[in-house]
Length: 62
Image 1 (cartoon, rainbow, N blue to C red):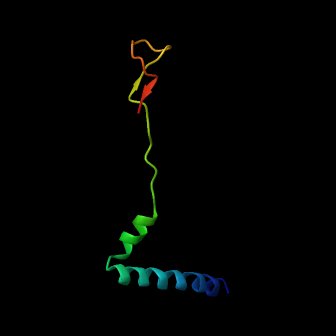
Image 2: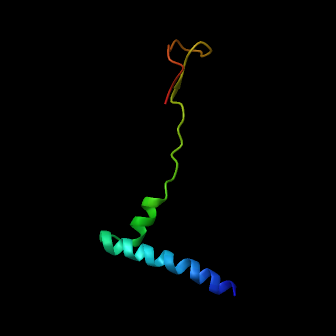
Image 3: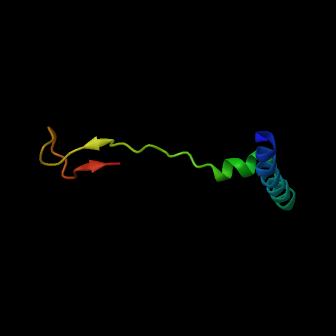
C-alpha cells in the first residue's frame, strides 16, 4: 500500500519536470539546480569602529 501512495505522488511530479524540460529544451538537472538555492555565507572582511584596535571609521565591511 505504501508503494502505491509514493508512486501516485511521484508520477505527476515526474510528468511536470519532463514537460518543463521538453518545453525549454534543457536537461532535467538544469531545472532542478535552478530551483535549489544554496545560501552563500556572508562574513566581515574588516572590522572597525569605536571598539576596534584600528582607526577605521566604519563599523564593518562585508
